[in-house]
Length: 107
Image (cartoon, rainbow, N blue to C red; front, side, top):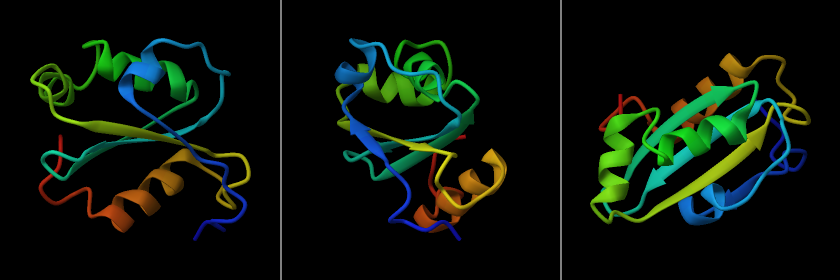
């Protein structure tokens, strides 16, 4: 289990995410649709770029469609470094389990 105090998450709106450049880091992104209470959790060696692709319509089409339809989202970036875990898969699985992202979530 990650040590929450060691993780330095960054939470952004999709507009902030799309309108800025960010460092090239390995980690996970947690897209939370607060309108529908749904999560999409992904991982990448280039996590900011991957999260940007979601809200640019180049990745998860269901998330993008809800975003385009006006649903409210936040995006949290959690770096692998400092998480206390050794792989992106274990970090992503931790948050999938934590948020119940396998239930009523995006594919």
